[in-house]
Length: 248
Image (cartoon, rainbow, N blue to C red; front, side, top):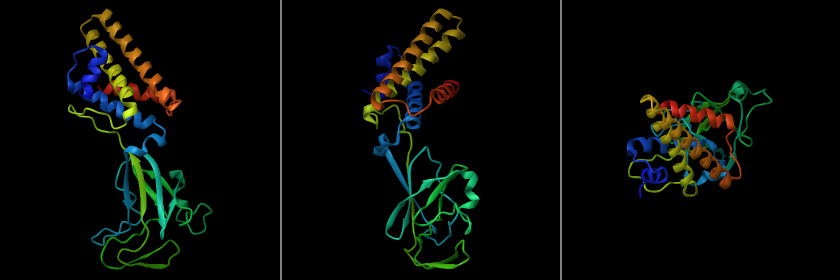
């Protein structure tokens, strides 16, 4: 049975896949935003941050090129050693490259910050992906040469919401499959409540609205039972759910 069919099986409705698939993808965003990091490693992706492209174009200081959904960990290599970078506020970004700053990042103690949908790792990774040596000037004004295949990389590990289609039969995060189904069911019931209200069948609209709330409460209860509590604050949950309902 496909995932969207499982939603209909739970609600008893006969909703079309095009509606339910949208709600299942909203459920994926809800889960990724709410789950503690330890549950996301199984679906994590990794991006390498280098200083030069294979064509020899410098990327030093440019930050990552990907907008991330949820950051799990950021590392910076120090030679052969993999150093865990600590997150820092973006309003202090100007201090990380200042030689005299007490907030200055080092290879042993790297840091990162988020700005404009990018991740900036400090000190800047300078790994040379090209087949020729490259030279740049570091923050101390020293000319530094990195040979082909030399320098240090940055690593960003992140989780993105699994994408559901009409043919999807199983959930990537197996233990949370029913949570996603119940969440989607709550949104589908809300859609039917809105349609009934447009038709001025307010009694039916109230019935669907009540079912929507019941499905949502079951979703939260199941989520708490698995994780021991919600990572997202109640207000954050309410805001996200309101935005999803407006978009649908």
